[in-house]
Amino acid sequence: MNKQTREPLIHITKRGSLPWYRTLGIRAAAILLAVIFSGLITMLLTGENPLKIYVTIFNGSFGSARRVWVLLQNTAILLMVALAVTPAFRMRCWNLGGDGQILAGGLATAACMILLGDKLPGWLLIVVMLAASVVAGAVWAVIPAWFKARFNTNETLFTLMMNYIATQIVAFFIVVWEVPKGAGQIGIINQISKAGWLPQVGPSKYLLNVIIAVVFTVLMYLYLNYSKHGYEIAVVGESERTARYVGIKVDRIIVRTMLLSGALCGLAGLLLVAGTDHTLTTTITGGRGFTAVMVSWMAHFNPIVMVFTSFLLVFLSKGGSEVASGFGLSASFGDILTGIILFFIIGSEFFITYKVNFRKHAGKENGK
Image 1: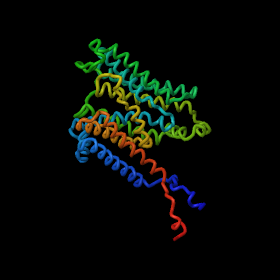
Image 2: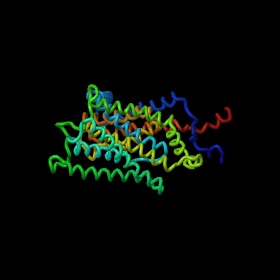
Image 3: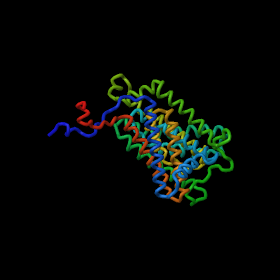
Image 4: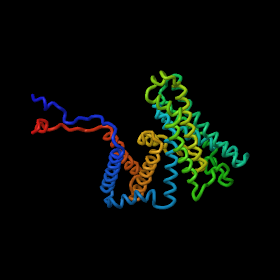
């Protein structure tokens, strides 16, 4: 049998580092193909013109000034959670407990607003809320971190289970604080006095959240890339054995990094409860703890790039929901469109990392 016929048709080899413009081009092409494919799918289901579908997606986020502010607010909160989990991910410690840590921070915030709203001056109440939310989120993250460092438990499963525990604790206190009794919800906290409500900055109540997210993006970038702690996180992420060899106390790094992640998630809980929603529910996180994993991974753990990946995911979510409602489709259709687009974007990473080579024709190999 001819030896050439036994060669595989396709060879997949690992690429070297690509220039930034080629990487950007591959990702841009993936987004373009995803948008085209999503439009075709929607057209087949609705019979509408694809251009009308794209306009609807755009209007879902930019159709009015309020929609723009809501887009920025949701981007800011998602970005905050992504920034929170990124140090742990860079250390290869898989913190999937973002939702639970947000709920812990939100619960601490709501407790301060309800129990201390009429007992403390406004500025002091906000300080106490800030401290309580950060500590609550940090504690919720440190528990699995301590077990990871002490007993080498699986942090993925541990942090996931902490989400469910946090959800049930919040559900319990919603019943305790529900107004009126039997309503099954807390309602707007301190609606008349507005005690504990974060102050409005500028023309929108969402601007403060955006500013805070921008500030923490810069701080996290500097922390991860130019601080001793950031260097230690990177070394532990590359190899725990190497880290221990050079004298880094890995267990301490794990606990410290998870504490930071939990504290920032707790702060996100404060922004949700005291900054925008002014109430507490078991679904207030909106699954951001899991979406933040995608944001962080797509950005390759770069806080600056996370601004764009957070914006992209929120934009897709808003646009997909607008298509679903505008054309009378199931509410889940927006998630389907988002999933399709993410599939293309994630798939593009394969072509950035690997090169596909096809078997050459025998004549070409022999120079014919």
